[in-house]
Image (cartoon, rainbow over all chains, first blue to last red; front, side, top):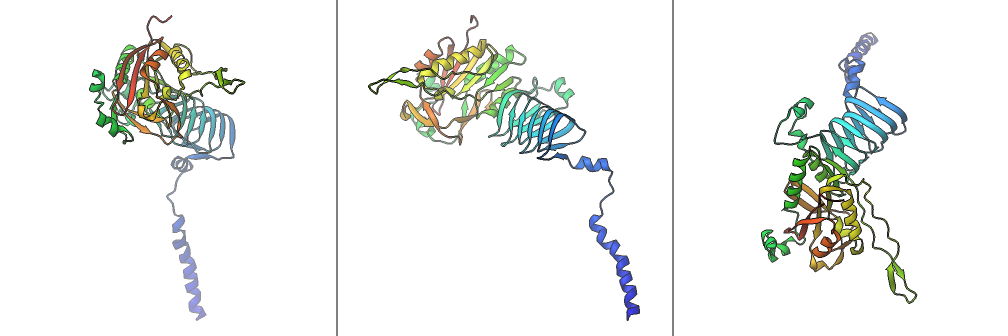
Length: 167
Length: 220
């Protein structure tokens, strides 16, 4: 009997690696690709003084003092984020507090829990009801004029229909 | 009277409007002011004092204006000096009423209904401050309730204005706490705005008056 059992156990052992790891089977990804799929996160306890630059999407829940440059990427300020900086990104979503000017190539969105004190310069801006904002809004000349397509808009690659959204 | 009839302000409409759900309203003064400032300058400067009218600020920015947003807090009534016999005397020092913006900066100022939250004795200060930030030839838009049934003083929460087009808006109630509010007669508003010129008063169906005001070009 034991002679018969041993091969079975061995068979099970040998079979185990082929069945259980299936949960861990993920397509082989490079380090860079993994980063792109999941935005980087700056936690609540992190405080940065100085210039912050990056080439990937970023979520900030900590405190930043200085300057944030995320060209071609999205910046999300979490509900616990406190930013005292000049911000430049492709799009900016604000759920926390920002003091400083914000420039976005695509869109700035302030959620009901968001608070901004500073000037906003972006082709598309959405201020939710309940959000706090003090400063100026500059969406560029005819950024959302639905009547005409200008070369300015084409150059900026801003879809006219999308730029007319409201909070 | 003619303007009253043109605005469709009938007794039925007034009754219907009290406490009625939000509905679209026309704002010819807004349309006129926007047409003038947008044709005059490539990027006119607009000051929006409405704490609950952020979507209007975004709308105006989309139309090509640079919009500055300020949270304006109406001043309290001036405290009165107590007389020894218990009566009230002349007002003591007033709390300054300041819009933190430079002189002669804006082509259009949107004061929405803030005038209603300014006590009668401070209305002139408020108007002077609005006049200060306007460029000569600049425009001011003010909205005021016309609700004689509510008395000259009552409490009401601020309203939210949404611009749907240059000449149409929707006014909705907010959940903000109610504040003291005054129903200023037309004459009192015009008198307070004295250095400025009231171009038109449009009476809406929902008992809101729209004041379109212009600062004279030859302002010294």
